[in-house]
Amino acid sequence: MTDPSNGGGAPGRPDHASPNPFAPPSAYRPAAPLPPRSPQGAPTQDVPPPPPPQAGGASGTGWYASPDGHVPPAPPSAPAGYVRPTVDPTLVAPPARPGRRSRGVRPAGVVGLVALALVAGAAGGVTADRVLEPAQGAVVGLPAASVEGRDLDRPAGSVADIASTVLPSVVSLQVRGTGGVATGSGFVLREDGYILTNNHVVAGAAEGGEVVVLFADGHESPAELVGRTVDYDLAVVKVPDTGLTPLALADSDGVVVGDPVVAIGAPLGLNGTVTTGIVSALNRPVQAGEAAETAFINAIQTDAAINPGNSGGPLVNGSGEVVGINSAIAQPPGAMAATGSIGLGFSIPSNQARRTAEQLIADGVATYPVIGVLLDQRYQGEGVQVSTEDQQGQQAVTPDGPADAAGIRPGDVILAIDGRPVTESDELIVAIRAKAPGETVVLRVRTGDQERDVRVVLDEATSE
Image 1 (cartoon, one colour):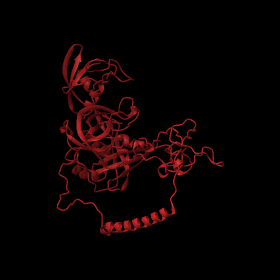
Image 2: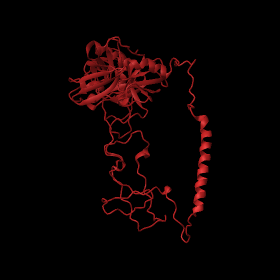
Image 3: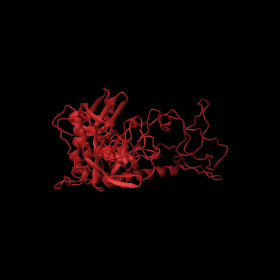
Image 4: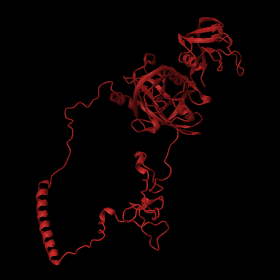
């Protein structure tokens, strides 16, 4: 994740001062210069234009043109580019009109004016004293809303209620490895210190890196990597803390499109951030991670805002139970890096996370199911095709594997799995990996012009 920063100073500001990122867009936009004007106010062509503003004007190291565009002559010793500041034109009396001679004030008039001014001043003083007298010692304040007798508790199932329940169990992680520093989110799995997160968050610790976990109450603890799996993009770390409050994993098979959900994590390093949305789709085939470490996820899609740093955090339902682990976001075509949420976030279903986390805690490694075929990525047409030839020394159909035992041959086309049509290789892969080794799936297979249903018992492969 990159760390964007502002470069250079704003016009008219010291170079070392960075613009306020929360200021309105026009805050540091220089105003367009007015056309030069003659002393009588009419536009003129023989007045030289003001010199361009120089950096540092606000700190006294640069010069600007006067407000009305007029440039008074520079003194003999003035530096190059000097513009003499002018008096605010609103404080200068207008010039006498041509052809009229101003008349002086006679001495008697002066005495009369002085006397009048004194009388007016005295009267004004008395009036002001009477007007201000009632306000002396008064306290000016605005009315405050009363909270007496009001129930400040939020209704059960509200977002505020869910957040107050879940937040203490959500953590942020900082991982220092040979490739730099990575940050992400996670949540407590067990009270004895086990924490679940994404593999891509802690991958830097796989070769001797350090993992630090920051809890919601502000304390930090070092963590050790228990196990990780590239294929499911999941990892478990353990801290020495005990007595932690774990989050319950819900049955993700019970999630339906339209269910309200809440995502919690540390997007962009902002710990304890809560966003809301709905489940906008199910069974989305998502490839996450780098090309060398690609995870295939049968994902829950949500429009809850998920940004870089949310990875590994929980997606919870209305009961505060985890239905998914936030792992990926969609980006517009052409985007070279994750730039932020566009309303398409993807989470690993909690049923998959439960099965994988149990394996990682018990053995340090995880397994995933396979049918024992290679798929032809070049195939264009209905369904997905089993490769017609070996690839990189691997046979198209693994001898004595699940597909071979079910009668699937090279060149066969798989049209559906458990009644769900598949049109891309990714769809078939993630649908299989959403199962567990030993389970049985029904594949709709076409050989030539003949279609048939075959039952395949999934085999097991060890994840990297």
